[in-house]
Length: 480
Image 1: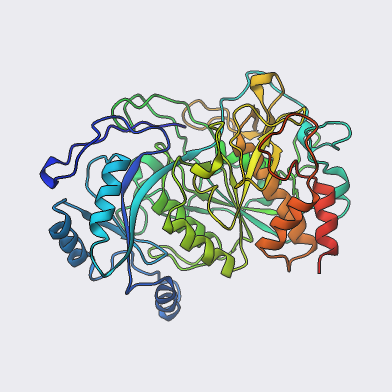
Image 2 (image 1 turned 90 degrees about the vertical axis):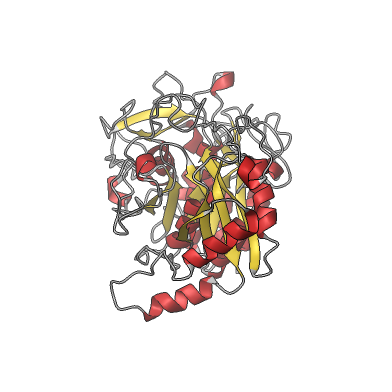
């Protein structure tokens, strides 16, 4: 799910243009502006004062005035889009921006003393690699590590915990109602992909965006140039359904599969559409997932303890993510993120490099770090993600069979990527929280690191090592 976007010329605004395609993971949808006078605490108080069933407006009264002032300051025809759950305002130019253009524009906006921060609204993509054509029947990743060196040692962990009572939010492409997922799905979830054409949904309750209580994956296929000049065609990935199956497929069906936490609940939150997902949509979805107030959306009735984010982009962590992660910690939430598939240091990837997340690298069946996986000090642990490049089977999970629109909802397929590694850890965190709900994010991260084991293969950059589910769950049980 990679996308290219041609940078537009903003000569009238005096902004120098790169006039070249943005590198995948570096596309920009606009600018996020946080004003000092507006906070998430104020939004929460406003939401609490509303009559039952009413939602905060995403169109504050001063939006037009703010946009006009920014236009005067920058000379760029910025248009207000909506307010975020952090209190920040989202603006766009109606044209594509290169990262350099967006950063220059952000610096101009920060000259306003009323602005706390301004930053590009980057677009994120799923961190997975193309699947194997072979139909794999074995879930090697779930086995005891004595039998499979790259596995996460789950059988002994399941004797202690199966994830009962824990909700994991999957921020991804949405879900399909696969028979192995249905028992654990909290439907309908919520769609945060704002653009109706990217979400393939009609406008929701606000009459403008596609935000609505429907996280069903409509398919992420695209034709050439759909996502900007030079962007490639691609089939639907059903990425969110695959990730959800790894976390909490219900098991118990001789024809089905088991997730890491087969009794946990899955809260589907759609943040990736036809052309990926913007930081503004993703960070709002993160807040909504843990029960925080987000303008234009109802309060989530089923707050999650764990957020899985198998997605990312090629930028350092932004202020929006830092602010949101702090708020999630305040609500006792835990964020698990894929490290990325660029075979480079993860410190340059976001949100996996953000402080306060559990960043996960990928290993193959033999236990070595996967050939594509990011690595480095920001990575907490490594988990099975498969490595079809060296001939292992990949990670087998739930999927839809359609190349474009949905077809058979009860299909299976092998994929590889740090996108597949992160849900193994999210499921493991659910096992740990089920047996000890008092754990916070720091305790969980420390226990995962302390109980991980040295990789049997070459795993330079794996940080602490490969996760050991049985050891981590026992440590969680004994933690005080």
